Image 1 (cartoon, helix red, strand yellow):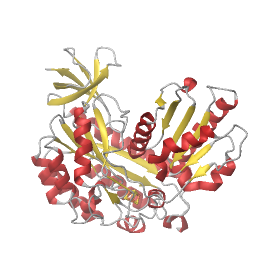
Image 2: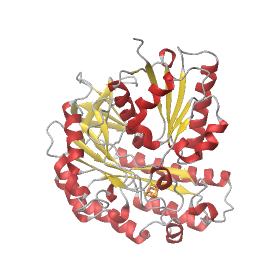
Image 3: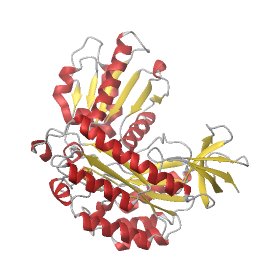
Image 4: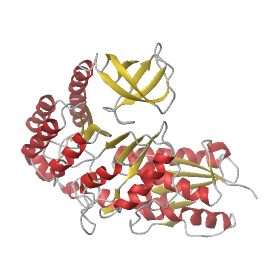
Length: 450
Ligand code: SF4
């Protein structure tokens, strides 16, 4: 029998990546073979993101690139399948606009991917069929879904919930991903044990809002309780928490992070803005005083904690004065890592109706001003680490002259933060070594193995 090979392109955030990994696992169980090489694939699957304009542009460009390649006859009996947030959001519009795509699947189809592909191959080439399956976004993965981990070097994401019930005024996620749905603690532990048994050393806890974990479940299990149970799993060395909501950073959670050695002293707190009027218009819970207080508490309870945040500039109503307040807030707080997004007006969100006169150019200018400021801050913070000892998870061979390996310390999350370049010894990929920091730049650290 001819084995069908699938090449999966995963776009967007780690939450989408986990869906891609589950689809790869479901397909592998049904005899499909994942491949890194599109030229040998029978199916090219693009798992898309539709969060903001640049993400949609990236997704459309990738679809068109693959469609052009397919039309030129690339690959054996090639089928092109588009999954995830883009079809979930644009449904029929997309189906009509992109006739080159054989099948569009919404976010609820993740566990049914093999059935859909089987059906697609059963259709005679010129046959008529429904080119889409886009239902309500209700899917929530569980530990019984086999997942093929695609991240490198013994690090894996664990998605503890899907959807979001926060309804920030600029955000389409609740309509694409549905209401917040948390997995049971036992189910998450079962998956985490399996990942640890596969050699995963760093577990990265994700959801749209990890601090909303459990609120939708009977008995309301807390994130803090989940973390306390995760640290008991043998084999895991680091546990990292992403996507926390400032208004839900409880003392109990901060204490847990401070007390449990396995949990990285690292917090990702996307605050979005610091001006009270803008925060209100964003429908965010809590004002700037609450955010300041949450950060001060985090620093008091977890001394030396590395903080990451993300911001939106150019939101409707962000006057120059309000923007300057945000810039001075960034100077005052001194986050370790920071990302800035120019506001993207998204149809179907409450903010889409807000009047705004801020040009694209002005949004870019504001973004650049914050990033320039942050580069100085990050360089100072990184320089202050010179001479300290840090654990580094080795991720592979080095890319810079004089540094044989590359990895990350507890202060650095994969993809979004910098890296640590190391030299000395011959550490294997996937091990954690103790290093002394010997140099720093805006984003990266340089270290010597002790
Ligand atoms: S917390 Fe707000 S920004 Fe984040 S996914 Fe939910 S609605 Fe969107």
